Length: 165
Image: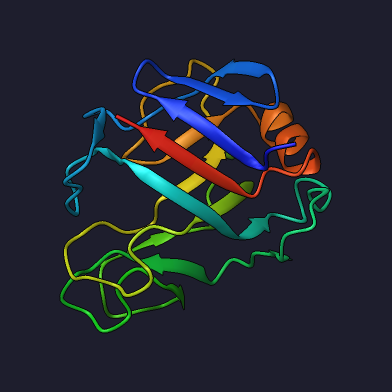
């Protein structure tokens, strides 16, 4: 069985015969992804690791590397900083996202292998598969699913996401 989920521009994620609605970037899917453009990049992206908030739920069932996040975890999205597109500890001098959020969308995060081998300045950062808002509102460039679906797909062996424009 395939371990790759396919995501299409109409907001559908397909994995092992199942089709689910997902949230994508507000600007849609784009091959020429740039930092801050609110687009979801196209491409085949392995899941590098999984993070979760242990105070809000159990460890996701997955064979992928997984670790809990802490209140001082962040992700640098500042293309001028040497830590661009990497996990960081807060406080941090560069522009960044806080991974420990009140809204729950980062309670489970699968880090997608986008712009990380090597990191190219301005090409986009913090591209995750994470929990969607209840109304499947657009993301800032990530792919998002309801929590139960995200956990189920990780448990079923999803190890990569192919985003097709």
